[in-house]
Length: 173
Image (cartoon, rainbow, N blue to C red):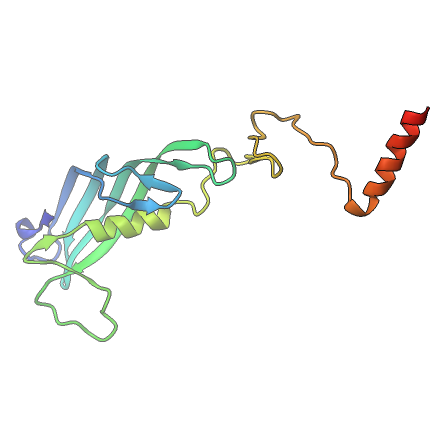
């Protein structure tokens, strides 16, 4: 929770805030996330406006996950832009304001804002490298580790009988 009482509900007043908070549980997507409890650095500007407090800034966090093609571990860092208007709790809601963020007794809960911004900023299918070749579909070998990896061409079962005849001919010679 972030206290906004210092702004005094005076439109135009603003305050810069830098803080580090622990990452909440399940911050991210299934294959890429901010580890729970890891530090998330917030560089924010709180600005009082007529309707409430406008929060803008950036969150910096470490990411961990796995490549969707080859399943190798990924570690990265993210810089996520944040912007949200938190309405004063005594402001009347209008139609369509169901999903509006609100101050709670002049306090801002940043977790929903952070969660939404992180999930939207992460790639849907993270890769260890842009041109990751992935895994061999037949045996599961990581193709980046063995670039010359190959299998014998599969024989169409309709022609398998001919392959047997070819082997028989070679044995007779």
